[in-house]
Image 1 (cartoon, rainbow, N blue to C red):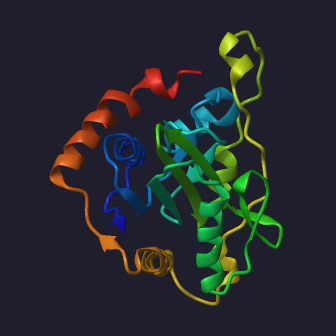
Image 2 (spheres, one colour; image 1 turned 45 degrees about the vertical axis):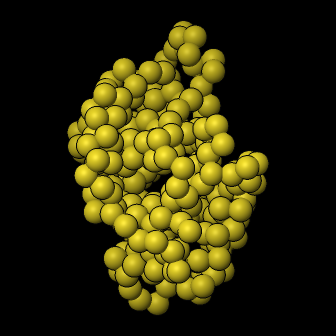
Length: 240
């Protein structure tokens, strides 16, 4: 049985903290669907200056966050949805398993999407989803974005970093750069519907015959402590 959480929150720092907490502190298999207000999220091993136009993001009040999984930089807003799968496994699964689950959902609503390199998802050769994954002991986490009606102009501006004038820091040697791809919105390929409709379809698909529940008060308290102690801290966000 999978515990399915439909998050009522729209705060990137809360959701990143929730993912880490649910991965490390429990043993439940979990599916979580969530959205955020405009945010740029970089991978654990990325150098922020190489991925994000920090000046533009600050001017536009776009949140900048660092997640605890690897992978490349992504842009979130209320026009896209995010899916998280957390499972306990006796042996590590192939992460393509989770990619296929997402493809099966998209196919079920009439989208002939295909998986590609680095576990991306594409429609007509254009990217609609990026993903990342991590392992903690015998627990695995896979999460992905789905661009439904995202502000693509903002996406391109946010992920257009300032030109590098030096490369003197040792941390940059170990930073993992993003691989840029041309993107599109799912909405262009569906006859009608809003992002809310799309979100409802996704949750209904993944929660069918499963257990649906909200965050408990204890979980919210613990997640907020992790949010405050780690994810909003400049020492974490600007650690590279």
